[in-house]
Image (tube, rainbow, N blue to C red; front, top):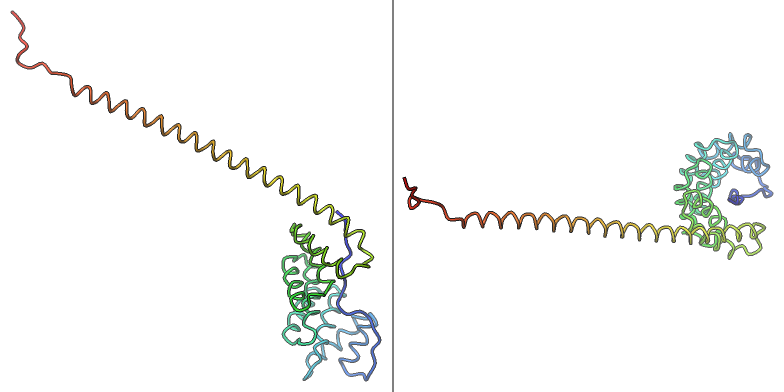
Length: 232
């Protein structure tokens, strides 16, 4: 099986300026790839009145980078409630956390939520495709990979994805053939079973009819009454 790189977090390192409030400091450290140092400031920031919704997002991503997946999941789910501008990346990043936890069905739901808000979110198609591979939903995975390539025609992963799509198409065709063969066998077995039952029923009916005929004939036998006399 070809392994495709999972598209990473929704926010990448960029320059940050401004003052050093809890949020600003936490954001700066997060973007400097210092999650352990960013966490205390971001934990403080989300408790402040009117907290920037990105504080929840950065905190969740910092937890994820530190391997604290349960904490990341909890914070991102709480952050979704707070979110308005960044709801799409919240769903997307929560999906990534679920993938890391092996909860691929939940991950698919989160990527789908992200795509319902932004149908051009290419990374969500790629990661949903990978999650669908994990749950053996190959037909849907193929469609997600194709959609990803439509949105990202210059993707460095294009050759690998196109090869994987070919394997998926071959696998899907084989699965369909097997399913058709199994269905045909099932129908044939059912027809044979019905035929055996019909023959058994006919045999039992014939036996019952024969018994009835014999009984009816016995009723017609004339008895010997007093008219029969034995000469002495």
